[in-house]
Length: 255
Image (tube, rainbow, N blue to C red; front, side, top):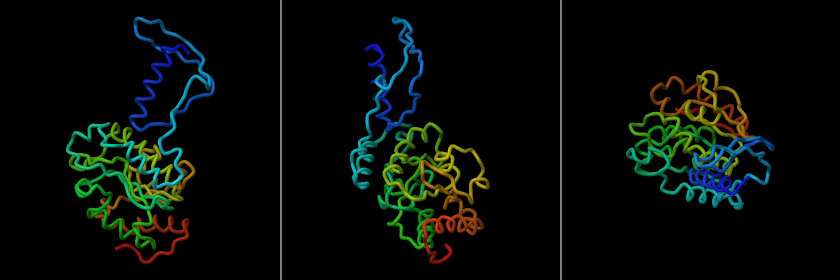
């Protein structure tokens, strides 16, 4: 690879690192054509392991999950990577809970209360999630809670694809550090983000998915349950499946 191509590649990798993206995939040997600026001819080269490099994530050398999460949060910084930063966001909601949690909940995005407090699931939906967690025989402090996007979409709208793609690498890094035994995706948005499946909830619920070596279950978002309490029984079935896998004994069915 010539020095000009190496320089362009280094700039591109730095751009991705600024976005929080560190993982890249390629074939061991591939023939690639590099489009150079108009003043330079197009060149063709064979990529070898020595040609490409990826800087390690800041948390890669840290053994303590709590410290690793701090490094991810520092890397996120006062994020302005997508339009949500300029659409009325007050606070970045990074996530909270036990860095060594066996169970992790992933929601869609912060609401008004979360945006004010900087904590996930603290509004009405959060109160219901707390009851769900307690019904499973756990305390909120024993699980980890995060969202697909860390800034509140205006009017609590559904996060757009570009916003999800920009923010989700930080969520994936959180999951990699925590290494939960099970993940519960709360709602269709979280399920689509993590699984890459555009399927209705009826086809996603009641089964296990493999997510990077971790078991993942899908259930209804607590905000949806507030609008349609009839689905609480179905959600309880989903949680019972998770409890059985984790060896938890239920305290009671959530109200």
